[in-house]
Amino acid sequence: MKKSFLILFLIFFSIQSRSQVNIQIGKFNETVFIVTPNKQDSLTELIPSEKIFCDKTIIGMGEATHGTREFFNMKAKMFKFLATHCGFLVFAIEAPYAGTMKVNDYVLYGRGDVLSAMKSMEFWTWDTEEVKDLIEWIRSYNIGKGEKEKLKFFGFDCQSFKGTANALLEYIEEYDKENLSKFSKGMSVLKDSSSLYFNKLKDAHNDKKGIAEIQEIISFLGNWFNENQKTYIDRSGRVKYALACHNIEILKQTLVLSKCTYKEAFPLRDSCMAQNIKWIYEFENSKVFVWAHNAHIYYGPTHFFGKDKNMGANLNELFGRTYYKIGFVFNEGNFQAYKGPKALDKNGLQEFSVPVYKKNTLTTALSILGIDTFFIDLNSSNNPLFLSNQRCYEIGPLFDDYKSSSVPISAKKEFDGLIFVGKTTRAIPIKRK
Image (cartoon, rainbow, N blue to C red; front, side, top):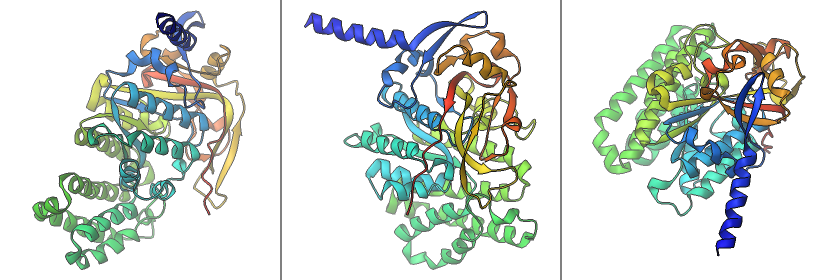
């Protein structure tokens, strides 16, 4: 018995020793944690970093592109670890709130099927095999668990009238069918006011009549749900009522965004997303894992839109040091995106590749270490490399060319932790009939 225990201990110690290593970055000694994103069954490699994460309330993980397999798989692995080792019960993703409720019903109760639930999220970015695998893992984890032990799946974005209207209509059809006719016209207007990403009200050819009509519908919904609160709670329960009501708040946010130019909408959207994460945290009374792009996760003004506060800066104000933000950087590789620079065009999703770029001073310095993928806690480092402006790739939903995709970052000022990936591969899109 003692011999078996000793063998297990040595195996465990060996895994820890291999994943946590001391290394020189420049002239500075640093501790890094070697990780293997695409090996989803090796959660033990994260155990040495457990002390960094377990006292945090919100952990946000970014991505340097919206279409990289290693980024998605590393984030999935981190959530699995946080759920099984650090008590994180809520997964939250940069996707419309209403659409993710379909995924939440699937992971909690097995309602519907995974592909239909994923489609309701509306964003092409998450319609991948990597996200599907994570959703299926959450579903499997929840089987046999008590309600308070189950993992939840939320979205915190607010860019869709259509999905939100559908969610409210489904609630009304189930719990207030006798008054369904009062909602049908208003809901049809909302459904016609949104395309997949950007609602049609942003079109310069639209006048103020459409916005005024939607404002009236939202006011009606708010008053109706407030006046019929007791009836709805009696019929659906308090939780379902609260989840339905949050759709009305999302509609208000979407309406505000629809009145702005795209550049004005970016900081407003980020402020709304931060408030939605706060609502999720308070509603579930649980630690929250947040999945989004680097540009939303980090602390500071955005690289894309200037000096305005982003979601990460707002979360910093709301949660202070209990918000831990992790960014991704990479040296070279493949990813999926739409051809830029102006809009999501008819060419559809494409696979792109970026080379090693000599002007990317941050990733050049990290690539010479010879470790393919590693995590470093920047809060424990005073390395000038992380304190000064260095360049790296950062790519959103659109890609034009690799030179214009290089941006300056001061890593420690913007993130608490950093994950470096030497070479990336494309996320695997779901193949639908």
